[in-house]
Image 1 (cartoon, rainbow, N blue to C red):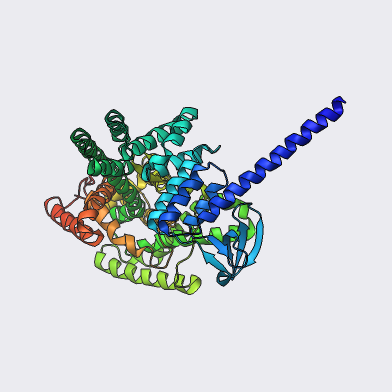
Image 2: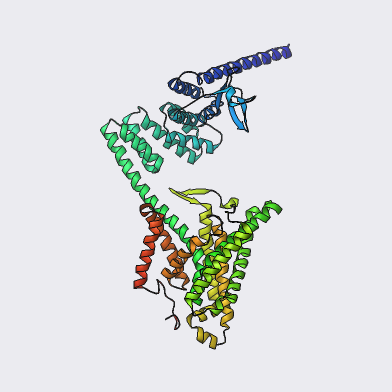
Length: 537
C-alpha cells in the first residue's frame, strides 16, 4: 500500500509539473507572439512584458530581435530565430529552442525594430542577465543598464545587488543602480546619493548619465549637483586623456627608438648617412613573415613562439646584409657623406625591388601571438598588449646595447673609433673590421625593430620608408652617436607628436616637429647630448 501511495504521489507531481511546464510554454508563446504584431509602440510594451516574465529563454529571443534575426514563418506563423548559412537561413523555434528546419528569406517575415526599440531591448536584456551565473555576463548587464537606464529594472537590480558576492560586479551594479535612480522618479535624497556614485566612477558613461540628469532635472538642487558632478568628471577625464596621450607618445617613441637606435650607431661611429637603414627594418619584418609561414605549415603548435624564433634570425639576416653593404660599397666612400647618401639610397631601391620580386608588392600578413593580443584598462587608459610588449622590448634592446658598448671589447673598440679614429688605428685597432661589425650591429638592431613593427604596421616593401626620416630626426635631435640622446629624443618626439595630433593633425604635427628640430639645431648643432672626443669636436 505504501508503494502504491508513493507511486500515486509521484504521478500527481509529474502531472502537476507537466501542466506547469505547458502553462509556462503557453505564456511564453503568447508573449513572443505579441512581439510580432502591432506598431513600434505595441512592440515596446511587448518587449517590457517579455522581460518582466523573468524567463531565462527571453534573453536570446530579445537579442535575436535586436540583431534583426527574429522572423515569423509565413506558412504556419511560428516565430523563429534565423542564422544565415550560405543561401539558406537555418531556423530555431524561438519558444522551444528546437531546430525548425531551414528557409529562404522570401518564406519569412522579419520582425522589425527601430533604434529606439534597440535601446529598449538592450536595457531589457541587461535586466534579464543580472542573475546569470557568469560574473562577466552580470557585469556586462550592469554596464548595459548604466548606458541605457530603465526605471522598470530597478527592482531586479536591487535584488541582484543584494545577492551579489563579487566585489567588482557589485560595484558595477551600484553604479548602474545610480543611473537607473536618476532616470526614475526616486526621492531627492536618493538622486543626490546617486550623483555622488557616478561622480566617483568618473568615466564617459558616468558623464553621459550625469549630463542627462542635469538636462531633465526640475529640482534646482539636483540640477546644480548634476552640473557640478559633470564638471568634476570632465576635469578627471581631461587628466586621464593627457595620461593616455603620454602613453601613446611613449608607445610611438619606443617604435622610433627601435628604428633609430641602429642608425645612431652607424651614423655616430662611422659618419655614414645610411638611407638603406629602413630596408634593414623591412628585412626583419619579412623574416618574421617567413618564420610564421613555415610554422603555420609545419608546426602550428609553435605559433605563439614565432616572434621569439624570428628575433635572432631577423638580427642575423639584417646584420649579414648590413655587413655586405659596408664591405661592398660603404668602405670605398668614407669621408664623402653626400656620395654615401646617394649610394645607400640606390641600395634601398634595389632591396625594395628584390623583396617585391620575391614576395610580391602586396602586404603580407603577420599574425599576433596570443600573448600579444587584447588590451586592459589602467584607470581610464587603454593599454594594448602589443604596444606594451614593444615598449618593454625596446627598453631591453637599449639596455643590451649599452652593455655591449660598455662591457665588451667590441664596444670598447667602437667607442675608441668614434672618439678618435686615427689614434685608434695607431693603437692597433683594426678600424675596417670595427666598421664592418658596427654596421652589421646597427643593421641587426634594425632587423629586430622590423620584428616588432610587423605587429603594428603593414609588412610591405615600403615598410622602412615610413621610419627613415623620423629616425634621422631622432638621432640628430638627441645627439649624433649618443644612445641616451637617442632614447630621450625618441620618447620626447613621440610624446610631442601625440599631443599635437588632436589639434594639428598627423601631417601638420610632423611638420611642426620638423620645424622645431630645425630651430633647435640652429642653437645646438650637436643635439641634446653631444659625444666627447677630439675627432667629434
